[in-house]
Image 1 (cartoon, one colour):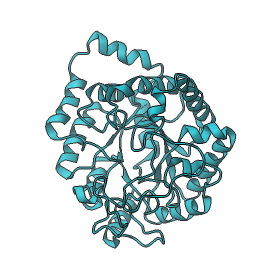
Image 2 (cartoon, one colour):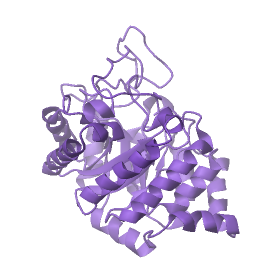
Image 3 (cartoon, helix red, strand yellow):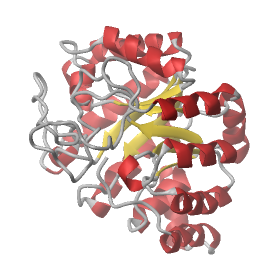
Length: 365
């Protein structure tokens, strides 16, 4: 996802300050108004012990340009999902982070949940657990059901869509639909042990929304606690400048999740700050080769720190995320350095050295 790069050292310290300074009355109210049944530290640590070291990728099948193409009945592609998750299994991955979209549910509620179940069946057959993501503030602001656009040659995530995007500010009734959606999905799968985390909101405040995303962020936590799934709920911090959102996310998540696309020194600084909270941690996005966020220099840190390692991208495909965020190649030719992804569409690795390292790191865990 395109972003302001997360957590330079000075900015990281601000998170620690938020944690350690005395809570103001306003902060206490902000937390308690949303938290009906947040996990205790003991519950979070028991979950971490049960699930071990999570490692995997953000996943949409290579045949899908976005979340709608992944989940709509016409384009749901179990054969590709099965094949590509097989490649993940072969290199020792055990977890995928997968985005949902409320429109696919709205059009076909029962079919949508059946397809979620089918996906979980396939993933489970490969020993892979799933992190499902509800809302997302990244990329295209508008969307519609039905046939999705073709990829723009050489453009990173040209067809990816936000959820709910600008429609939230245009339709006063949408929030009621979103509440029904979240609660329906959570109620259906709240005790499914194939799901390891509910990621309630990806990068709230992105796309220049800033604090406009706070009301929905607060609501989705409230809805989740009203159902109280057996799995942890979280929303990952990603941009140090979004201080209000960060404070709320860190105060109200059952476990700590975060994104970091920087090199090893900056990533370690982020870890050193966030781990002072004493909760299990999962990095739900990392690995951008151009940015020196690599399997070779980041994944060993995450193993050592026992932090879940979920990189962006498994198989190069219609999402075009082998191209960099801000470096389009309009003729669609091969980028000199892949930004994300591990495999070509035929299953051959982009880098055998990387795959060998991943296998080595996962073999003992």
